[in-house]
Length: 442
Image (cartoon, rainbow, N blue to C red):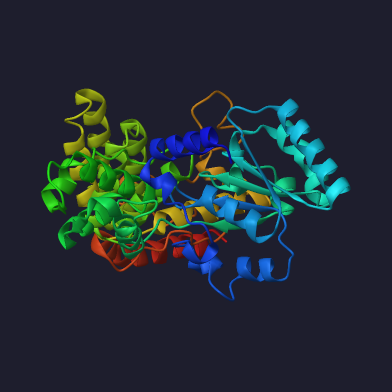
């Protein structure tokens, strides 16, 4: 290497952020994702057997998807090429694939093609990859933060192994921070950094499993410190962290997963968890109308007649949301969420309408009994419509012993919780009376 080249390389290294300089140089240095990367796990087995095929890396940012793809290229002795689905089109893809074929034909070396944000490719672009993925010309490594079973074509997913990355644990983050603080070649070792344990805990907590975010905060704190050696205290850590941006895609996994967690927390009678997921969605900028609709649905779907007040309260929260807007609408939404979470639960009405609709959709349609048919038009009397109908309010207890369906069906089965417990007892009497009326009609 020439003197100028060495100087240029050194300048580039100095410009690199700490997270880039501290990228692991081997699989043994890689932190996290041991559920598929540890010895004996699938990805290690594929490398050991020299059978690494196309894979999809799916998970949150800052968990090592790009870094691991580079390490896999080294471990599999493959030529590494990287494209971004945001900046590349079909033309660039075809050029890379052509070069990969030439490399394989001329030198026998395969190409590991890393496609960042592969979910940004449309169907036609994804289809371009298929022939070379299928015949093994390239080892495709696609990185995505979106669920590949929704965002990628089934043809591409079926030809790839999907590895789901998890956010790094707090211990993983602390391990990376300690390594970066002491490494004298690539890290901050020359600054003689003394890491306070509470500062480490703070960065591990606020980074949300994102190594880049934690290392960036460490670097800012150390480089901006006025004294050497650097005492990296809790206060310095707090001053080095920006307000975190909440990872949230209003049309993707995070949207549906958070909504699912909110509803399941309400259903599971945990108001604290429900409030957390509500707050998470509000902080991320979720549409409050969507939240209000989900709360109204939960009031009927999961509480129903166990607490008849739940639905009107949820509807009131929805109307208040429309009326007052943000930020104040968080208050009626929180009131509704906590009430619904603490209310007795019943899905009896939900199950009942499902069974009734299934009968209508799959069975033979029942005729309306003659005595229940409309008689408020000319000619109805001559057809016998309404004849024999008993007006329920004329009965002493408001229940007329007559048939309303023509056959016996029991869709609604109240649970022994809340107000529905009272309904269950009353329904036993009602059904006995109706059954007697049906028998008399026969």
